[in-house]
Length: 457
Ligand SMILES: [Zn+2]
Ligand SMILES: [Zn+2]
Image (cartoon, rainbow, N blue to C red; front, side, top):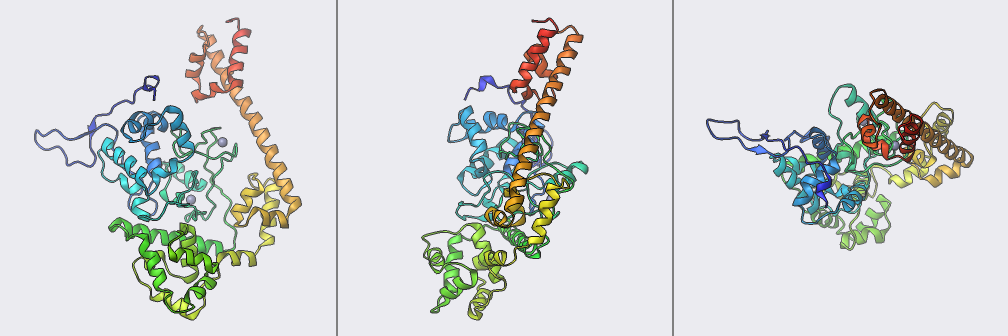
């Protein structure tokens, strides 16, 4: 890593927030970085480690990627070049929030730098224990636009709760709106470690990712019930894991297997949870570990929680198997059965009629809880129109954006010119709200053209 190319992080020598107050002539411990407290510790809304890192970088007035390059990378076992770090930020950085060794390593380094002892709780180690990481974490961040809007309006810190990282969590339990995964401006996804400070701003086009009004979840009460149940269950696991480490998830499968001891029980459980018998057998044989989503689905149908099975409270599950009747139908069957044509059409018409933000049919299908194929099957014409509309919207948006960039550069150049200062690349960059704007070829060309017109070159 070429550290000489980067401005050094301003070293803050400050009194630790976690240390006992200064007594007598003993010097208090100092931390290299601010020991700011994490958001909502100890609750289901607890902050994620990458979010904490972003806010910490903000306090030091540098970008999160820069903070990582300068303060974290030198202490890591694996060395990252600058290029490698950028790729990592966009690809596998979610594992910093996970339950593996990487998350533990990053948390420990940050705890040392901030002299805090509670940053390990911002990873899934203290939430999901040793559950295998396959599909445990979203690959790219998701966020609730209404939460961002609410926090901003109340002057509260903008952060990413760890809860949003679970793939089965698709709605915000506070606002009952869908978590967003794409920027409303350019449609792009965001990285977990940003090249900029603001968490609620698109890293590509700077569009604000919040929105006071987000489309509500389909009125289909089953989706809301499922989501509320899933979040309640995750909350239960979180509360248990923060008191004492969870038992190994191997115990979960041993206990599940113990519930299927009698002849035919395994088939019964597979049937009532909507699993293929062979699939359940691979879980119980331990030749395959299901994802967190599959575990939650199984428990939801049987109306037991993963924690109950993990801790060996097996009577409720045994009762469900003995009765051979699920509390709820498996989700896949319920969704197939209850395609809400009217509500789908209502949303499509609202989007095409401009009463809702334009989105593509793939995003709409995800929001409605159906597959793209199902939505296209029922509304082929409308889906084609949605695609056309979103493409046109993005094209117009990109044009407006380029116009905005040109105008911002023009103002900066004219201001410098009026002061008799040569509008060099460096000087113009300083004037801009986002210095990275000048990397845009249109911005650079605009500056040169104006300099020529003004007689500077
Ligand atoms: Zn929300
Ligand atoms: Zn964007």
